[in-house]
Image 1 (cartoon, rainbow, N blue to C red):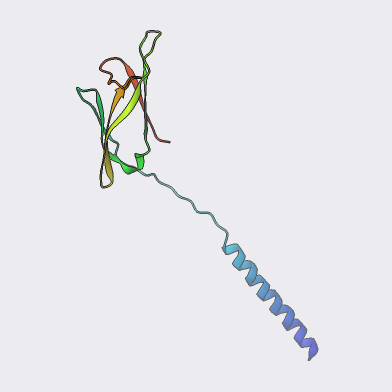
Image 2 (image 1 turned 180 degrees about the horizontal axis):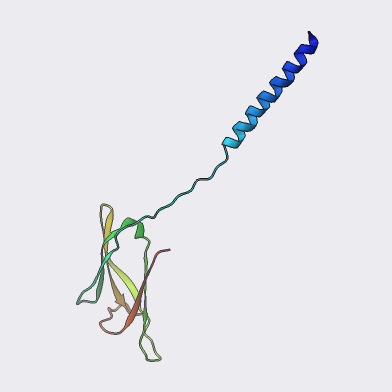
Amino acid sequence: MKIKRLPVAISLYFVLSGACYAAATIAHGVIRFEGSIIDPPCTTDINAQSRIALSNCPNATRTMVLKAHSVATSSAKAKVKVELLSDTTQGHYYDQQYRLVDDTGSPIRSGMFLITMSLP
């Protein structure tokens, strides 16, 4: 009777160890995402007071950075800063108004400037 127990024990061992290996391979895999996230762009406007208005911007672009550079042809280019005037939130969207100022904080009324909007 002892001889019959040995094959049963060996068979049981292989069956159970195979089940353990099968469970380990189920845990591995690959997750793949496809598609894109699309938000409507901001509406931009520059009014007569040289204010830059951004309207209906999605909150995902809230960390946007505005920079301005003078593109004047003279060798003495003016330093330009972008100053935030107002910031309002309307649910999932926001509005902001900016203006260009010089080193002294005075609004700039004329000139040619390159304004760059970037997301970090």
